[in-house]
Amino acid sequence: MPLIDLSHTIEDGMVTYKGLPAPLICDHLSREASRAGYETGTEFQIGRIDMVGNTGTYLDTPFHRYADGEDLNDVGLDRVAALPGLVVRVPDLQAIDADRFAGLDVRGKAVLVHTGWARHWRTDAYFEDHPFLTGAAAAFLVEAGAALVGVDSHNIDDTRTRARPVHTRLLGAGIPICEHMRGLELLPDAGFRFTAAPPKVKGFGTFPVRAFAEVA
Image (cartoon, rainbow, N blue to C red):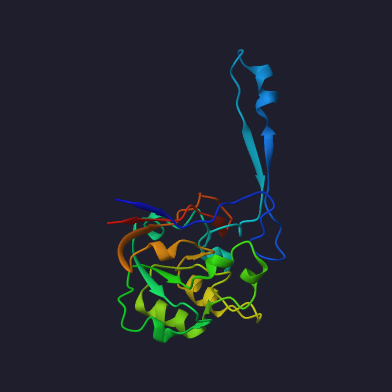
């Protein structure tokens, strides 16, 4: 099945969220320095990265919002891998309310909200007046049994206020969130499998993923 990459590239100095540090990517061991430890013609590079969990395209687990919630280690692969997917397209809409999901069968599915906002990635416009879900939309998705919710925007919540009702409701119901996605315009509305599996890190709630879709 064709694979479609839905993740942004993580680069040195890249800002994902204003106020959070950009990743620092460098050599821990350079190829040149490694040569002293090996036979002539043999060399290796060991990279080092210093970054916060909210970098690039990342997955939020309940621990991100709740101290007693499931962390990256606790959330099983069945919650983040090979999920049946559904794309909800809401171009040119800032506040995405529950009516946009009405009538859709989201139970057990990864619901990916395509806003088109990824076109602003790595620009100042990406952080301003971005699309977001409303609390009512989150409540609907919880009640309707969504397995995971993703969005190709700066945040699934409205960052103009201090409230975070979407994170609160989705993560409170054990529904992972994938933010800062890209490429959703390449997907069909349905008929694909979605994966956004993070590494198993204990005591961490958020981490970058290589999100992708397998299209039938």
